[in-house]
Length: 276
Length: 276
Image (cartoon, rainbow over all chains, first blue to last red; front, side, top):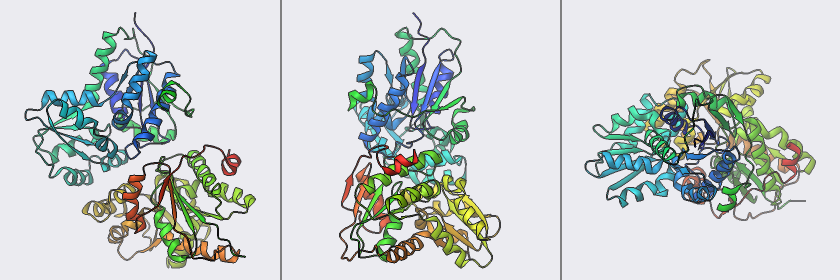
């Protein structure tokens, strides 16, 4: 029996729109709801405990809007909150997907030498989830925190001499000589040209497409796909509609609308309660 | 009668430590409490309504710790919240100081042509408080949002070729030919060398020192200065002690300790209630 409820996709802010775009391409029949926690973006510099708390509040807000599945379209939130979200999701019968495992599987499929580097936020790199999954599979991981890439993408400077110089500085002497590099932050696909020039000959893996494929396969296997045609994607943000519109267009490749401003009801819902 | 209670100083995160350092130099006898809202930093990209709400919650947390005065050591919070904070402060008998008026007065004292530019966050530039105060005094203001300066300072890249290039890009063709430029964000003093090279011959005004002077004079006039010697500064943050320690040292010029992690009690206090 098909399920016409929406897939809930969330991120700390705007970056997850790159994942949303991949989902919309892969699953054109599915209704989608996107929630960007723009009142508290970025998550990349927050502590694990705070990211977990914020992610649970956002998950609760989406479940209150009757979604059939959740996609954590944020690497930092996947790092610190996926396990807890999946546990509560199982109790509620709602599958929860992160962006890290799909990116890792894609990288493992493409590396020839087993030397894989991950680029991400401070939180993602320190959290070590990518490195652990890669090491478990026998690869030799390295990781580089590249926090300025986020600001460059949000400023619209991803295709400038500044982006080139920043990429050179972060990646110029990447240790271990990886043959494959995971773009472990949803902002980084915008910087792909600058990153590619700093790492000639290296394969770049963007987890957005890999994640969309995993979600598609899992929902199909569980009989949870919609019959279509999809209704328009709904966008929810916790702050600053104007900025979401302006900057989000660059990430989505289209204008994110209609956008609705919501207040998160703090600590009130099954995800928050079970993580407390 | 002297007043030995502390001065409460707050910022969205780490930048306000440049103001705290100026206060400690100017008022060595005064006990100081610093609160950085690191669970929700930055304020520069948030809406005015959200900044007001966050600033009131932070002010309430400091007043609950019995401060005698408040210094809003954040340009974006001063832009969107100072009027409301000062109104409630008057009712409570607690003077509230911002960083914008002191910087404007200093710039007006130093400009010869009346052409003054302000560099700040998106929120500060769009809020227009600097521009309004300058225009009221007969100056001809311009303003440039320089959001990447914040990331560069936090990454410790303020003294690199990247900082030079970013400063050139933001400021290279600053319209109107100002002779005086206000560093309208508490992060920007770290980039002073790069900014100075992008704007040769221009006077740079840093509001931290000017703010400390205004606070000192006002407290003396109201008989609110402490007898000293000062106790050690207390640092409070809402998230990520480790990062505050690591990055904050660069802004304060000393290690910010002891640091205590606090949770903000949302909407509970006179500032939040009166702004609601």
